[in-house]
Length: 124
Image (tube, rainbow, N blue to C red; front, side):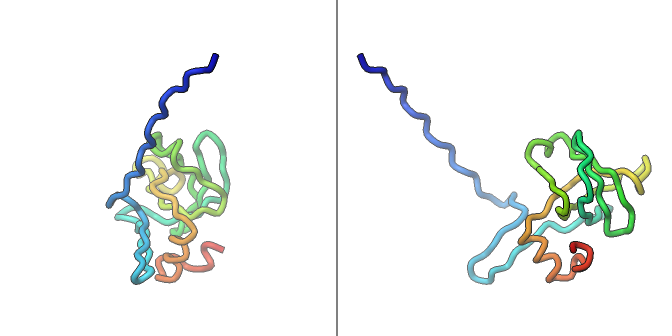
């Protein structure tokens, strides 16, 4: 007696669209990375405190305790040394608290350094 095989489900196609934060073109090898908007700051992760809270040294000189918002919690994993964009929480200690907006990949960090958006000694 043989077992009946179930039909396999078709695999979902990955969506490619204009919503991607970084892209590479074959003709010019240009990489575009998301830049901070008004009120946002570059930062580097110093420590992971747990419960989606990170300790980040910001480019403006402050060390902030930031949280990963709920919509990014399972999708955005941060490690020590990652370069991120944060939004300081204005109204409640903007020099101490903030929220994570974006995390950069290695190639995006190189592009930011080469185009002088962040200083080289900040990352190393």
